[in-house]
Length: 83
Image (cartoon, rainbow, N blue to C red):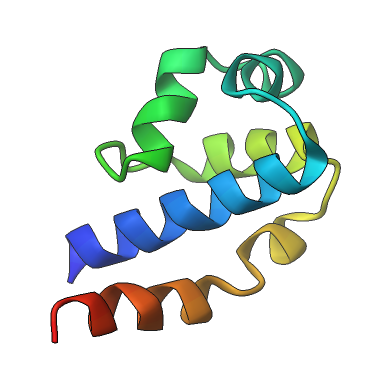
């Protein structure tokens, strides 16, 4: 379950970043996080802290609750990929 959640969250972040038309490097700069950390989150191999979530939300210019909005949809997609 943990891996599915991390993969779904990574897809969510990537989707929001792509919607803004910014690179991982730009999101990292805006968030104060390293580009490789952003990459790891998007690939589902990093489990970001709450502090990192807040920083990413700021980097995407959304609230933390807006950042997580839609996570359930991405989680459903990841669960359906295994079927």
